[in-house]
Length: 178
Image (cartoon, rainbow, N blue to C red; front, side, top):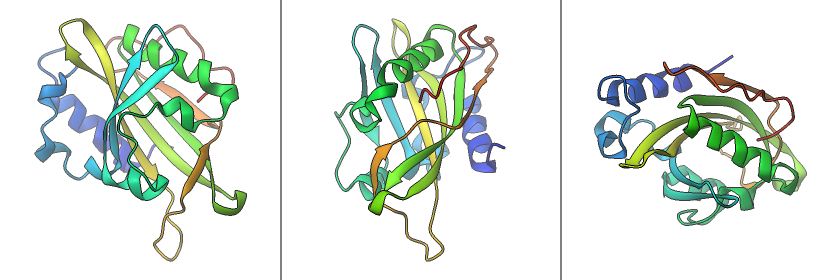
């Protein structure tokens, strides 16, 4: 069910690793990630509060939302009912380095829904350990080539942990949580 783009993104992430470790943010060479950059974001989760701050956003995020998301909390864009569980799953990706793949409907103009595919992978910014995530979004494009403006991110409908060589969390994704 994963798209070729999602699998290719994970492949470039794997190539950025230094040995068996999770790649450092400094190893994210934009030449390697260039084709993904417009649909990619780097997010800094805060383990002590419900915060997933955008630190870097590709240009398509501006196109989707109509404003720059840098510095904003991703959780402010989601259905309030899923904030805590979304944060918990991201923190699980950091504690036991793994990825998360999902298909997520988003509410767009006139209440319609569009489908997005997320690929979430951990990275290291500081010496404290795995502390950021990279998110790659494959978005639905309308037949005319346009992409609808996003109003709110809904509950994911399909998801799975991605084993990146460290196993996956025992935490099951049992609720519509992301």
